[in-house]
Structure formats: structure tokens, C-alpha cells
Image (cartoon, rainbow, N blue to C red; front, side):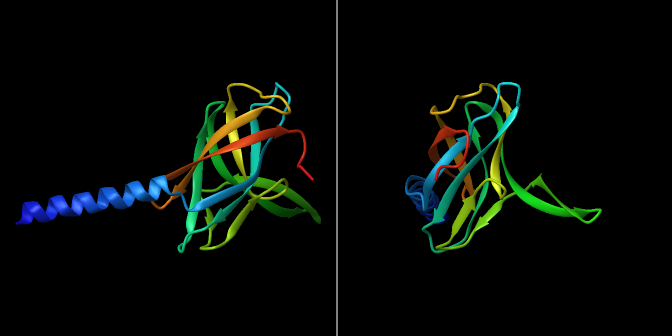
Length: 151
């Protein structure tokens, strides 16, 4: 009896996690990657991520063939000698509320691609795999390489 119950629970878990992974609850729009000179080792990715689900999710990072790391970054503003200074720092995750949108944009929160293995040129396309929690959900996004934000 216990063995049958454990088998049933395992099957239900498999069906739920498989369904979640195959039916992502996010929509990606306006995804682009900052074109940079070949001497730079890092670049930034920008996009709008819509959470279509009924619960909040977190963007926890990702992967990309052209970079060794893909990490969420938040923009910070500090005051030094009366002057506002913008900076950035790594974040463990960026929250997207249920039914909400996370906008990754220049001058704001973004994804940092670090340790570049190649430098795509303006007009190229780059695929990035975004990773969300809970559930280690992964979603692919195709980014256009641009020098500046599209209008």
C-alpha cells in the first residue's frame, strides 16, 4: 500500500513539474543585447518579462553560449559629495509579481553577460536561456544585438 502511494505521488510530481517546464508562464518582449567593442568582457541584456501566472516568480539568472555567466543586476544610486552616482550590483533574483511585468532596461535593472567568449555584432541574434524560480523553469529568448535601445 505505501509503495503504491509513493509511486502515485512520484507520478503526480513528475506530471506537475513536466507540465510547468513545458508550459512556461512568462512572455518575453523587446529582448535585445548591447553591442560592445571586442575589448569588453561583459555586456547587458534588456527585455520585458511578463508573468502570466497566478503566483510571483523570480528571475534568478540564465545561460548563454557566448558568456560564462548570466546574472541579474540591480541599479544603485549613491550620493558622493552631493553628486548622485549610478552603479550596479549583483542580485540573487529579480521578483516578478503574479500578472506583473519586469522591465530590464538601460539605466535600470538588467541581466549581465559576463566572461564573453565572443562579441556578436550589431544585427546578430543571440539565444539566452532565462532561469526562473520556483521550479528551475527555463525559457529561451532570442535577442537582437543593438548599439542602443530600440525606439
